[in-house]
Amino acid sequence: MTMTQWYPKIAEYDYDGWATFDYMGREFHAPFSDFDVTIKINKDYVVGAGGILENPTEVKGYDAAAKIKTEKDKKATWKWTAKNILDFAWSADRDYSVESFNVPKARKCIWFIRKMKKLKYGGSTALYYQVFPDYEQSFREICLPNLRFHPGR
Image (cartoon, rainbow, N blue to C red; front, side, top):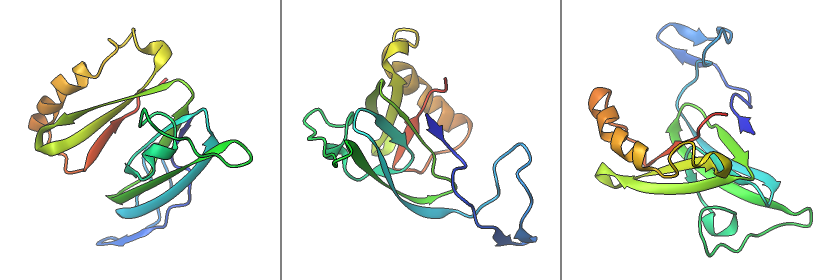
């Protein structure tokens, strides 16, 4: 399950005036924003999203010693914050495996991969770790506290 473009965006006023053009096969135009998002979903799912997970010890997948907190409906609550980004997207899957590694400048890359596809993609984050420096050299330095990779289906 992947959720993008799932909430109303407010038009931005910029040098051309109000940016009210419709979605036409690309992203909606929007200003950079701060997000504080709460997602309630079945406790058996792992959620991946942009930003910082504020309660990794209360949900599945991020901390081996996590005590998963649920409500009466057996749903876990995920709390995310993200600062100065264009959009907040998230995905969830019962079979996600969460792997991470550090990259230059002490940032963390977090990789979400469905366990059943793990062998198809080599089973580790090694490829991303090798590609990341080339990416930054070819394009530009990524100035986010962490990076999250969500392979498509």
